[in-house]
Image 1 (cartoon, rainbow, N blue to C red):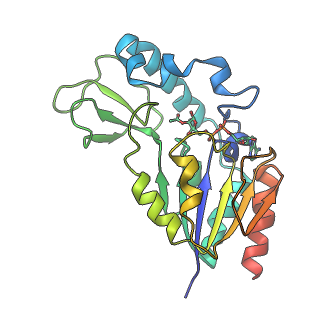
Image 2 (image 1 turned 90 degrees about the vertical axis):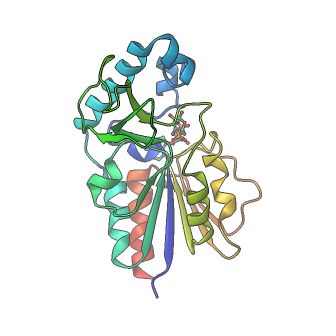
Length: 229
Ligand code: OAD
């Protein structure tokens, strides 16, 4: 039987594709205040700015490509059941060929109704504006989990992690909860890998290999190793 690999990814995996991370020195949260663009209050106060922020990021996404790390993770499916759980709102795992992807924090290429959260639309890389409405007549918003909002898929993600034989954490500062707590759901005996050039808060995590490298180097190396096992 194939072993289960769960990959927890964050913005660092897309950095080498040209997408900014959030908390690095040149990260997005240096340029913007979270409370201006990524909260419900921001949406109520200045919807145009919020829409512009996500329109801009969607347009950037159209111009970038997956990198060696995304492609390597897709190759893992040759030998393993692979579930990607990503905090990223980009679609680079999809475009690299991974088939099972859970987006914890939403997706840039989708928008949803502000009236009915089940009315979700694929818009690709197009912009949306104030006045763009769902079929029930309410304003469309980005399909993004903003700060202060619940993370609807967290229980599903925790269950996936609890089934992992191998857990690969890549490109996340592990500062944003509840996502940062997911590692703790991995079962006893799970083999854990963390790939990140920075030193992360990993006290108390056992059976752990830390790979202090960029994703574009560290992920393909680890994938080659795992495919040879
Ligand atoms: P952060 O910006 O907090 O962390 C990025 C991580 O990527 C850091 O640990 C960096 O060291 C690492 N990194 C940078 N370049 C890398 C590279 N080339 N290869 C591998 N790692 C690299 O981003 P996240 O942890 O993803 O949420 O942030 C979590 C959430 O906070 C995001 O999903 C977003 C944000 O606010 C929402 O927007 C809801």
